[in-house]
Length: 199
Image 1 (cartoon, rainbow, N blue to C red):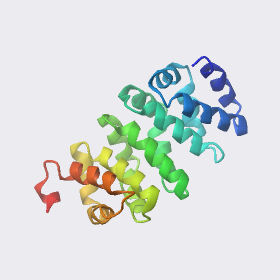
Image 2 (image 1 turned 90 degrees about the vertical axis):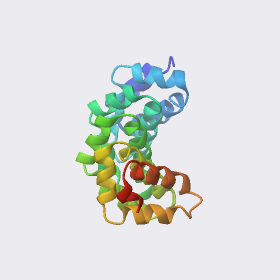
Image 3 (image 1 turned 180 degrees about the vertical axis):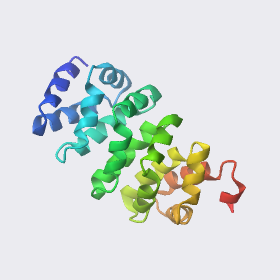
Image 4 (image 1 turned 180 degrees about the horizontal axis):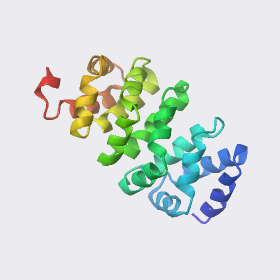
């Protein structure tokens, strides 16, 4: 974790060095102590959120933010405060790989964090995630996980249920080995307390 301040400095310059620094921070934040060290480092989250708008750094920044937010609503709030929710949503229509990584990061940022779920809905996440379900594969699994998080609060549940084809596409993913677990979680959250969605 002693490397974290140096990696944050590297991110300030952008380009290849920033991309490599974000990759290294992803590895450090892959374990609990490292996750806390990165989140606590001044400017780390703000700089990573800034890298989401860089074509050469977006995928790496998504992975780093995904790890930082894992199991930490406080880090999710810090990411949202830096504009991370809106920037992650903006990446959802990107190519399959970046879009999937953005959805993975978004799922962790939204987990156990109702204000972030509201922000994601307001930024237009639901229709973009439903579109990702249509492609199947890794992107659909990531989208289903993010949909499950949005559907973790009442208005999010209603927004997903109201989106044309959302439930049909999630049911279709139940037959995909790659997507079944995430689709189950999403459908469970959508149906929670909603007899209409269950039918």
